[in-house]
Length: 239
Ligand SMILES: C=C(O[C@@H]1C=C(C(=O)O)C=C[C@H]1O)C(=O)O
Image 1 (cartoon, rainbow, N blue to C red):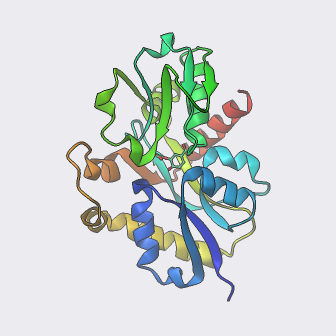
Image 2: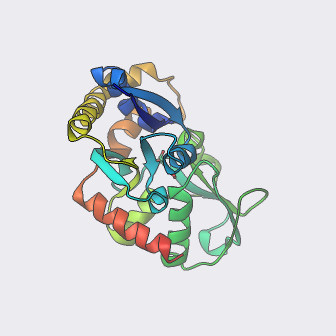
């Protein structure tokens, strides 16, 4: 049987999913690679893979996409790994540098700055800026280094009252329901094994990995997260 090509996020937030897949028979049915989120997106857009854990912002660029299963990378309020770091309050920020590894959070920053904080800074990709967006493991332990650290999961919750989904499992072609069911079961196994996953991670004193995997990240793709994705994508299209 031809293997299904899957691109998953290479950050700690995906370790539970990776553990579940790697400890399930489904591993024999897929070719699995780990990529930074922007590459998960481009690989699914360019049809280099069949399924990706893709930044939700990229869904706008995938014709006929299908969101698969019941799990995502999300949060209900603070996520603790998606920030705007700044030396000034957001109302005084004139330039914001975006994170090249991100698709969702760059746009989430723009949506919140426009609609919630009602500011109009310039956005740059390189160089010095008053503030910058950063996602993933590179943010661990950095919160304390900046006078202002805006957690974008938390700010989205304050703005909308909704949880958020940063990335979802999506395909660019129809996938058999039996495969999706088996894939979802593997993801659940991983979430149920988070205590074992934590034993495999290098411990750090500046960041609480247990709190991150159990309490900050919220992996259930609930109806309110689906509503939130629709609202977010609508606002991204109006940027
Ligand atoms: C919570 C996170 O969610 C992520 C943020 C993404 C983005 O901004 O495009 C994409 C995938 C997820 O890894 C994180 O990376 O810290």
